[in-house]
Structures are given as C-alpha cells and as structure tokens.
Length: 203
View 1 (tube, rainbow, N blue to C red):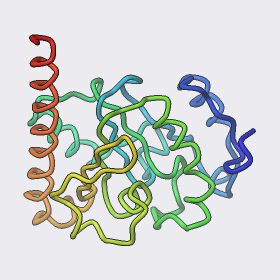
View 2: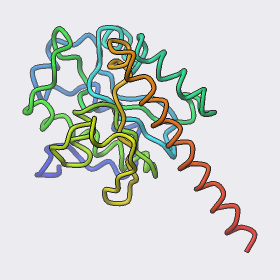
View 3: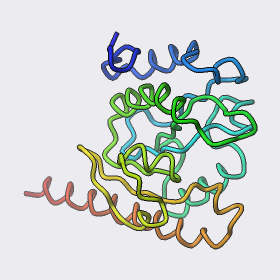
C-alpha cells in the first residue's frame, strides 16, 4: 500500500483499479451511493476529461455524464470531431454527494488518490478540467475557472485546458460560448499535435 494515499499503485492496470474502486468505503459517501461512478472511455485516450462528482443520473447508472450535462458534453465533442469512445471521462469524486452538494475537502482528499491512479493508467497528454473543483485540484491553484478558462496550462507532463462544467451552461446559457471556445482550443491543440507527428514521420 502507498502510505501517502492508502491505496495501491496499480502500475497502469486500469481494469483492476476500476474493479477495486467498486469496493471503496474510504469516506461516508460510500454508504449513501447507489453505484460507484469510476470513469469510462478509451483506456488509452489522448484526452481525459475530469469533472466534479456524479449526479443523480450517474449514481443510478454508474456511468459519468449521462444526464443533461452529458448530452451537452457529447454535442461539444461531436462538434470538434471527437466521440465518447475516443476520450476518457472521470470525476474528482466517485460517489454522489447527497443532494448534489459541493464536494467536501476531506472527501476530495480521500477520493483523489483514485483519480491520480486513473490518470497514471490512462496516461493522456491533455487534461480538460470541467469546473472549479477539477481545475483547482489538477492545477493546485486557488485561481477560479473564470480567470483560467481560455488558456492552456501545464502541470507535470500534462497540458491542461480548464473550462466551465457543462452543467454551468445548462443553468447559465451565457457560458455556452466560452465552452465552445475552449473545445475549439482543444481541437487546435490536437490538430497541432497530429501535424507535428506527421512531420516527424516524414523526416
């Protein structure tokens, strides 16, 4: 066991990690959930999206982003030529907080070791953080999403594109334009990566 996290290091074994996560009761949310919502998508994805926590629909189905926010996310992915099975999606918390309240600091502390292991296992090159909680955790910053969105940040080996959580645009449609801009930025980043890879092959 890794003493700093209390969970094993999975050495890129995503299947085992997801299986073990089903048994997690590290915090009280493990006693109130219907399902663990570990994550879903391409286990070798170049892009990993990180949200906040499961909602009611996700808790019922055990799959992330299946409600209205998930529909908006799918629309934005399709707009830039990506599909769900090409990316990986996970959340800061793996279990639904009661009444969809904000995650508590102690819940984030206990649950994010799972996320760290997921990121290691998937090994993406780009992280897209959806909302304040994901952005602040990944970038280890107190700067809010409104100031950080529209930029490409770097943390360790990852490039990070912070954007509003899709749910925010459902309640405030003025945020939809910003989300579209950030997805366009993601497309530009991926297209540039692909072009550079092509040029290297031609050398």
